[in-house]
Image (cartoon, rainbow, N blue to C red; front, top):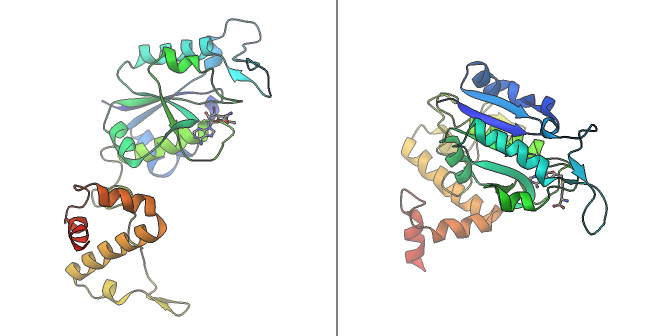
Length: 247
Ligand code: SAM
């Protein structure tokens, strides 16, 4: 089954946008995924095609109406009943690589993009919608978040990345960050590629990479490091178990 992305957006022309180029673009033209924007304005009933109204209780901006958004969501559910429905909102659960992997392993995803001040909260009570945030900052609309989520999913679809780069070693796959990367020239502005990476000794290289991945995670992302240490099955080599034994 082809992975289908339905995107509920007031700006359907933003899709596939950057996902029409490079890896995702090639995958799209090869039919490895389908991009299907749906405009909530098509579900309006008034002559102005209004999707929003003023906030209850007063205040600045406009709010996306629950009735209009729900009608668009219902159409998306009818099209693809088995795919998860995500809404982009800063109030949502932060998106993780683990959730991205789950979504990419399924038949597709429906993503609802907010605008203005966001959604009438009753939409989330009335429909099975997962609220997702892409970070602790505010975008002007959910479309960029949808593009981020889709890019992260599409590269994991079968046959999209080369077999040699399955993504298994990358940052967040085993909770921690990836080790640092280098390429030619060997010496650049007086800086030389670490000797071990030039040694050809694969065991030593693997050990160095593991050590740097762990060290960098501990220094740069103590939050991830804590999680890594607290979850026994995260390291195939059992390294964290050894670390814990030292305590
Ligand atoms: N009033 C909202 C708040 O303070 O939480 C922000 C609304 S924002 C200007 C408009 C839309 O952009 C949101 O409804 C959401 O779809 C999207 N958006 C903004 N920041 C986001 C984030 N960090 N993650 C996901 N979506 C975001």
